[in-house]
Length: 294
Image (cartoon, rainbow, N blue to C red; front, side):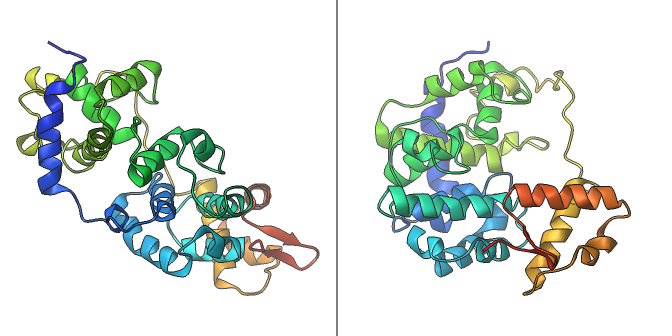
């Protein structure tokens, strides 16, 4: 029968994590809160395996918020390269400025202050509070939601977006002890990322198969609303990426006609350029054309 009691999951999940955790540089004891924050922003909508080299390059160039704040948004966008969703690079630059101006160049440890930073939402604030400062909080990402609804509720997938019931389930599952709660948060995320995956769960390798309500019910198929994948080809996102790549490769502003080959629809190109300007990713340079900001 499904249950909301996560206590039987704690020990096997933590034991599994101790043996199978990936060796990621932002998990090393010497990593600074700034390094943890950068890793969490980079990992938004991007697989962790892709961000290790960019994170290392970023931290080598900008090891502190002050060092990034002293540089330009254009430098951050160029360094972001092909990680996708480049607004995150601009938000990190804005965050660095905010940390220098309002927090003495340090990353704050409390979630309300973290949530006030550009591009930092509830998940990222909780992750930084837990993993950088050891605070007891509840870190809820897609992996955590999937593991909990399978193990405790017997459902194949979490809801299309985080709802109050799933948030309450995650909160109730978090151990009361501070250090244990931090380990639990990261361990549960790791189980979801490596074992209890969305499409091909490796139940034979899972540390909580015996406790899992979904496995015990015979792994029933998902019967909720259709889950649509994100298309990239032929979208505004693809055009925006092409514009930014052209500007990254150029040290001089580019005229509007330089982007004509990116899409057959001039209206779409103009719409994407306007959106990039509004998002702070591109600056118009009078009659010259367009450039990265700063």
